[in-house]
Image (cartoon, rainbow over all chains, first blue to last red; front, side, top):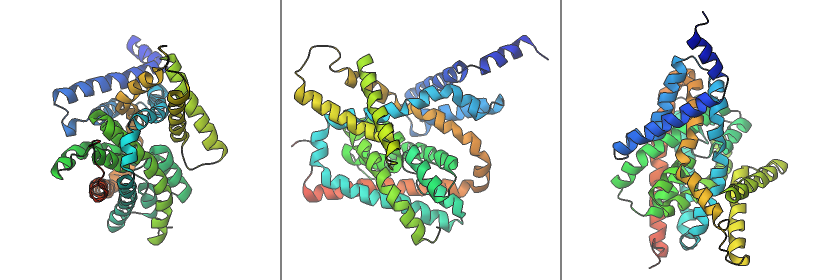
Length: 241
Length: 127
């Protein structure tokens, strides 16, 4: 029963080191594949590493809680990363000030479309009340989205997962979509990514250019505030709450 | 590097405390972002330009974190594994709602931006 390799497994699964290392290695490999494929949209490193880690957790029968004990050290840095978004914002304050009107217009239209389209499509497909509430704040940053979902009677952890899927979907389609729409203005690409796919969109935009990154940061921050107001309005108008 | 991370963490800490104490709908790190803007502005306007390596250490540290921002979403994404039963039942609804609304929101935001930018003559480069 207690073979040496099993003992080793028991020992390792008790320390955060195992899953922290696994997360980093999975990402490094996924990033390498992504670079080799010339950053192909479908081989996004977050998608690939998430899929690989899910498969490993399933195969080893490891609960998510155990995984997260190690991975939390990576997760924790999301907060400081959000604060650090102030740096590209500050450095690009000139171009941001010059674009104040188009930024405001894009934010209002984008936030309404992101929430409205989600709810209308979900309703047409016969989603339950709880699922609609959980889906509604899907394009904004996780802590705010979970707060909205919880307050209105949704499933906050489901919302967190939906937010991640939205972000991943967004960064996979944004490149091809923007090329298809012939939009090369870095400001427009950035703000759209921030509005439709929160921090993942911002991470993607930063990899494209500092201008896109700073517009994305603004889009993500203000869109989450607008959505906090919009979601209850939409849900009431549709008779869900 | 150490000075930079200390400033960033301090901004987040003050942001988190403020958000929690006043029950604000804004998460602490977003308030921290605003505080960091104030810090950078104050430094450039009131502190004499210093040759000390600490002066630009906020930029150095912050840009290093931002350059690797994507990996920070992996632990939360793996959380999908907990919700597989819900996706087995409502997978198509969730997938189609997310896919279609994300395409619409991306296109609507980008086109609105470009339309209004042309209207008011706002250009990407400083002419």
